[in-house]
Length: 287
Ligand code: SAM
Image 1 (tube, protein in one colour):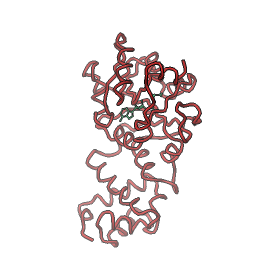
Image 2 (spheres, helix red, strand yellow):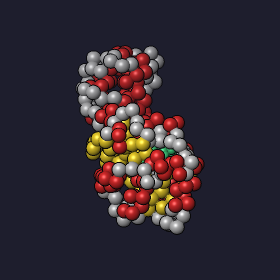
Image 3 (cartoon, rainbow, N blue to C red):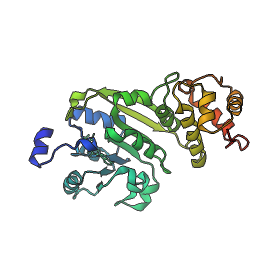
Image 4 (cartoon, rainbow, N blue to C red):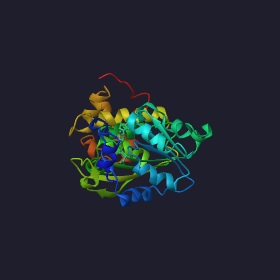
């Protein structure tokens, strides 16, 4: 049955507000599972299972699947479908309201909350960045993330200097990122406005910085990108309430020309800058 017919049969309509663009092409669904290298040893968290097309592929291959769906009607329908499948748990709720690692244990053995897991999803596009931040900044991070996102977002996530963005730094700080394949808009129902891409993130373990330091690192990145196309000396001074000379001095110590723009910095340069700006003598100096 096609997606439209399946939806009609259950009196359901795709909810635009929740980014419901369903995917049924079996080859694409299998290729997403291939990209995630899903095996029986895997504990998978799926975000937004929708009508369950990807969930079924994952359930066939993985040891365990936990899927979180915000749409009560769809979650109820899927829960009934998988009621007799103990390896699959459907949870109704907003992914942003849960700690991903707790979900992995939910309904299964709580000890699972500590074991490695993968996230595989055809993401709702209206909250892609928030979901990426949420899962990459979780205390217990997934070791692999394979997600469908808008193609343009995939390009921004995997961008390199001199075309970095805050999103590129936020993702590449935590993971090695690559585009596995692009998918045309016609593969979805309803058809979205834009093409999509499958992105694979191999998450660094251990994470590059401890949690407190990560917060400061992103304060600096936010400040750097705060004023588009401005020289870093100025955007850092303004964003971090620093004297411009102190910002320029920190940049010089990190061996970064103060006149460069945030888009041109490598991850190594951001880290070097963080180490200079995290010093107690530099933090919080009034402008
Ligand atoms: N996995 C299905 C597929 O590939 O056909 C559906 C993908 S659709 C692009 C995104 C799904 O995420 C929808 O089912 C939507 O209801 C769900 N969703 C949207 N926002 C969510 C949230 N905050 N938490 C959990 N699920 C969400």
